[in-house]
Length: 220
Image: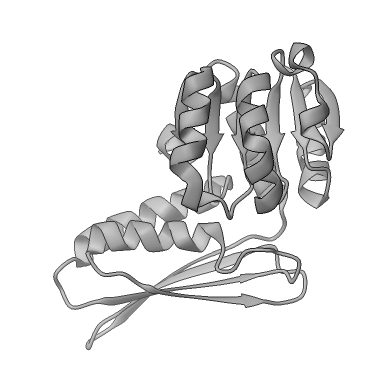
């Protein structure tokens, strides 16, 4: 496969490093993905780490002009149906995730299983996340995903809170409180490298996939 990076900030640079470690050719990294010609795009998997506003503008072009797309950008999930429909219409593979970290996806699975066990036993859930001050959406897409898992499995919608502190890569905590005990589950990222590694793993999958997929459904 060959890759194009859309968004060349900190995450874009880490994705570039991950591609290099795996020996995957990087055709270009760009802040203007809509300028990439379809002739080039149709030979490449695009890995998108831009901004919510940029992705909202770019997704029709991504769906039309690329072989496949991996989206690590969050903050657009209110238009999921439109985005998914665009990719399905164009026959372009899409893998999306609120978080591409393998550890976070294991965290999702653990929270889901715990919620199944605790259902109907008087537990009140909550979710708290901490990220760096540069993160544009709050609460994070990951926190919202955790909340959705708990809500659908436990049957109780958790309160979700967020802090923006320094350069924290990402910490997510799910708490289940009852009258007799408390369960707490935390995932703490030490750097953004885990997100980049997962996104590149998804790009390798996307190169030979069809359809729209959430990353956790492909690895759990």
